[in-house]
Length: 390
Image (cartoon, rainbow, N blue to C red; front, side, top):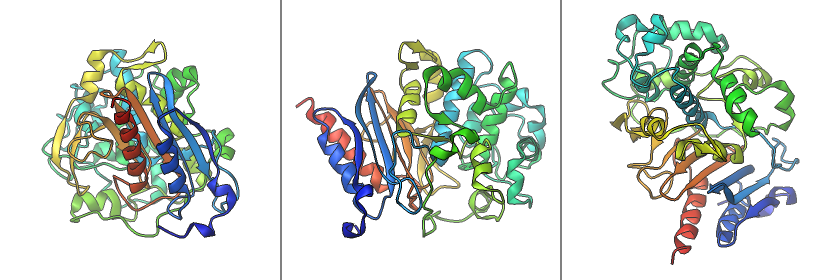
């Protein structure tokens, strides 16, 4: 850990609430903020609709002079995938689509090059063979939503679909997004469905496609200084991460915030993610039931497990959510559902404990999954939960 003497006083300020018996979680949060490993962050834990922990601290701006506030929004990258998966589940619940129907039944062009048998659940579990665009393009082309969907529909898969899973870091959002758009009765974008049907009615501060009116609240990112360990490089990895067009670019930050990348650029607070993850736990937010037990089962059951072609992990993947086994990035319970985002964010739902948890931050590390900062907080949290029953 780095010397905390270089920290300015504003960076050590922690605001929020901690339930009795969870004081060590706050201590762990303060310790993280007191090092150069973090700049600003939020951590939230919900149980039975009550906040066990809801903390923010540090700084939101790149110069580290503005305090992180309770309503500071921050991009959470692939943690967005969990929220997009919940929107798909909401459409399943409302009989707009089925996990076992083919993507091509909604999106006929997708059938090209042998992708006709790929189901919605298989696309959401990264089995479509489209981990990234294979034909040269410009990074700015990602901002043409319909053009990117047409490109992916026409693309030859990198591996035989449904024989393996290879993480789709950015293309996931276009697959999930177009499935949602074509399934929705009004043809709305996935981020619009999220806002109009869930976040707006529940007053949840999360956006996929963040309007300009909210940009003043957004924190600045501190990018990692070292590249991530991607393991053995293959064609799927190269398409996902290593081509010069593998991720969006060539636009201003404001354009990126407003665009809809439903797997990569959600903006929100830790509290917002913890509240949305309640839907992955029991289908409810407050007194409103959004998902039935049957839909929850279909969303959360294992769709594929084992070596991932893109990420250097064994992964167990449901319909857009990661299952905790075998890595236990989200606490000790095997069936916990969650997702992590580039740089360190994460959100998860542990039905065994009845809790939902989220960590957001603006100083990105190069750890793909299992960042030591949320892992430290999660360890402290579960120690506190265990002590409640001693």
